Image 1 (spheres, rainbow, N blue to C red):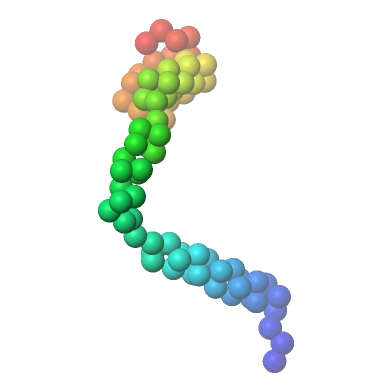
Image 2 (cartoon, rainbow, N blue to C red):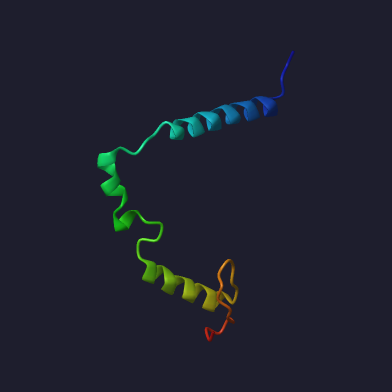
Length: 78
């Protein structure tokens, strides 16, 4: 019985993705590594003020908002 190449490709891709997802589940943060993860550089936004300014410039120039609670137009005057 001959299998189609698309079906084999999907099966191989699924196997690779399952292997990658399973490898992430085995990692644990050791107590002596938690101080490294608690540093400012490891935050989602390492510099909140720079991120806020960038967001303001973006929505002022684009004239569109998405997912924020601030209303405004494209001219930069809220």
